[in-house]
Amino acid sequence: MNVIIEDEDLELLLLGEKKGKYKKLAKDTKFKDRLDDVYNFLVRAIDINQVKLNSRLHYEKLLGDRSGQSSVRIMNGRVERLIFTEHDGGITIKLIELNQMHYGDKL
Image (tube, rainbow, N blue to C red; front, side, top):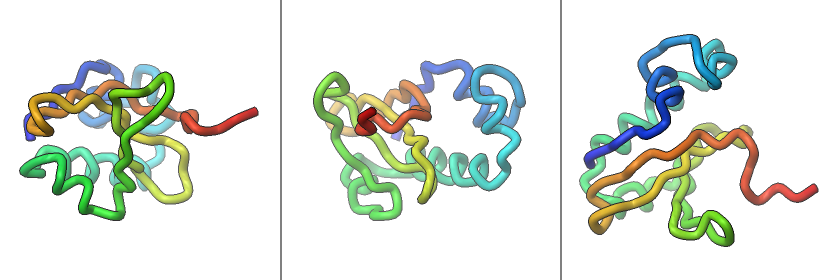
């Protein structure tokens, strides 16, 4: 799929740079490797249905104030999720952010 990254700091993280708002995550090599795996899977995926079939990603359409967006899990046991908007019937994914606060957590 065509993947467009709008978050400059996320792009720096994917390029291995240790600066920007995700510089703490860049030091976590296990997390960084898993993020790279998820990103590469999204790029190689034929369409969004292939992403949905990969149970390891825990793909889900978001609700509420995040309606119209979808997310995938990066790593089990962590709250960070890759949140994106689907375009053109799932052919293009526009990455929006790496969410460090699980959108469903309530205080």
